[in-house]
Length: 350
Image 1: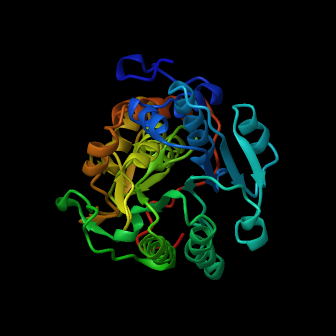
Image 2 (image 1 turned 45 degrees about the horizontal axis):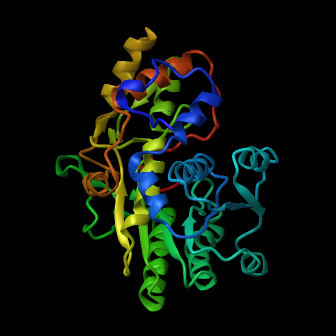
C-alpha cells in the first residue's frame, strides 16, 4: 500500500469516495502503532464526524502491517446508511446506546478502546444530557474496560481562551474551560484520569483543535460565507486546524505512547491561522469580494501541537492545500454534513 505524501496529493478532490479514501489513508506512524498493538480495537461512538474514516484507517493500517484484528465500531447509528458503509470496509458494527448499562456490558471485550463518544452541538438547552455523555459515560466505560488500553477524545476547549501571542495552549497549561460544554469535557478528562490512576489503565487523552475536511470544519464554514457574500465577523480572529486524515493518524499513533496517569496530547496544525487571511485567500480563489466586520480579539481557542507532531508525526497536508481543495469543493456544490462548527463562539455556548 502506498501512503499519501505531499508530492502525491491531488490538485482537487472530485468525490466523497475519493475524499474518504484520502481521509482513511494511514501514515507510517499509524501503521507502526497498529503493528505493535496486540489484539482487537473497539471504537465507541464511531458514527460521528471523524469516526468512520478513523475506523477505516485503523483497518487499513492493520492490514498494511500484516496484522489480523477485529475493528469494531459501536454507535446508536441513527443514520441507517452508516453501518453498511463501515461493514463494506471490513469494520464490524454494533448498534448500542452506551448510556444503557446493559448494552455497554454486552459489548465484546477488547484490549484496545478508542473513545469518541460525546456531545457538543445542541449542548445548550440539554445540559444534563451533555454532562451524562461527556462526564458520566467515561466512568462507565472505564469500569467496563478496566484491563484495556484507552485513547480518549477530548477538545482544546478545556484550555479556554489563550493569547494569540503565546503560540497556543500546551499540555502542561492549567485548564480554564468556558461554558458548560467545555466544563463537561474537562469532567470527562478528570473521570478518565481518576480511573487511569485507580485501575492503572494506560491512556492518552486527545485534545483536538480542529479537524477539517471538505464537508465540515472551520475553513469550510468560512468558505461558504465568502461564496455566499456574507460579512465575516473577525472577533474570534484566530484558530487552529488540522486535516482530518492527519488527526486520524495521530490518534492511532497515540496508542504507542499510553501512560497512567494519562498522556495529554494536543492534536492541531503547526500554525495559528488568521480568519482575515483565510477569507482574503478565498476571495481570490473564488473571485469574490470579501466583507469584514469587527476587530480581532487578542485571544482565541488555540492549541500548540508541537508535542503531538513530535510523538505522532507532523501533518501531511498544509493549510494552503486545504484552502484550495475547500474552495473548489464549495464552488462546485460538493456535499456538506450541514453542521456548522460555531468556532466563533466566545462564550462557550454550542
